[in-house]
Amino acid sequence: MKITEVRAYAHTLPRVGDYTMSTSSVGDPDSTILEIVTDSGLTGWGEACPAGPSYQPANAFTIRAALELIGPSLIGIDPRQIGLVRRSIDRAVNGSPEAKAMVDIACWDLTGKAYGARICDLLGGPQADTVPTYHVVGIGTAHEAAASAHDLQSQGHTKLQLKAGGRHIDEDIDSIRAVTNVIRPHVDLFVDVNRGWTVEEVIQVSNACADLRFSIEQPCNTYVECARAKPHLRHPLLLDESAVDLMTISAAISSGVANGFGMKLTRIGGISGMRAVRDLCEATHTPTSFDDSWGGDIIAAACVHIGSTMTEKLSRGVWIADPYIDGHYDADNGPRIEHGRIAVPREPGLGLSIPDGFFGAPIASY
Ligand code: 0XW
Ligand code: MG
Image (cartoon, rainbow, N blue to C red; front, top):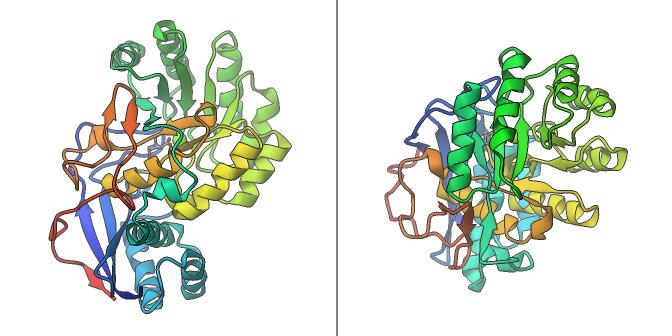
């Protein structure tokens, strides 16, 4: 099997409802879709969709610019040789993890389709037919947060992520208290600040809520700030945006800075990179989630496949943007949340059948 063409598409995801974090809001998510065509007639799909232009170092335009260099380097390569593919694109461009992750996911899709196996089966096999997810409770008044948490638990959610930051910490403390007042037994709560607090603020919030059970995710902007705060916290600390590579992740585990992670596949190198994080977390009994910033069925399926292979006790859940998107790329097999869980796709590769022409004309072809 050889790669004969690489196509890139731009796809604006129809958003349902608002989604605001401490330092940014999602806006109209501009997803980049990658289609890798082979001489076997099989094609593979990848996707990368930042949560708005200011959430992370990459945006739709930088991702597409990187493809200008990556695309041509793929022609003639066997996509099943994912290690060779990685070395080729690393020679083509430095950095650009989101664009490279798209290639990785598309190659895993092609490999599964070529061998008639689901990606999760190629990764060691799913722990169950469904995976746990977590649902966000947005930034709002304490009453709104409590009402949302109540409703989500009634829908079967057992993992809640309360967004915080971007305002005085007294408002966050009020929301944390209001939500913990309605949290039911066996429901896990974590407060995700998306880098919005200072070291002083996270210490103050943790002390003010010392009597409450929750974890704190990415309170401060940098790894150094989170590490500086950690010894003073009364709550477990989770890293997300600062967990940028395996060296940082392993250092955070061995130093005791991180008690767990919120991981994004396109930040860490796609399915292949997330597999390495999974194995490190399994070996060190460190919980992690399997997420991405935003995106549709393609990135959602990739997260579900790798997330399904993690020991459930160590899985913090698989987050997908489905509740905030109107529609699917694959109406039948696109991942969706039911009673707090997501079904693992059943068909080979990613398990998606995307209709021809769904994304319109390519914006680029290599
Ligand atoms: C909840 N997410 C995975 C989706 C948004 O991109 C933010 C992110 C997070 O946990 O930071
Ligand atoms: Mg997070």
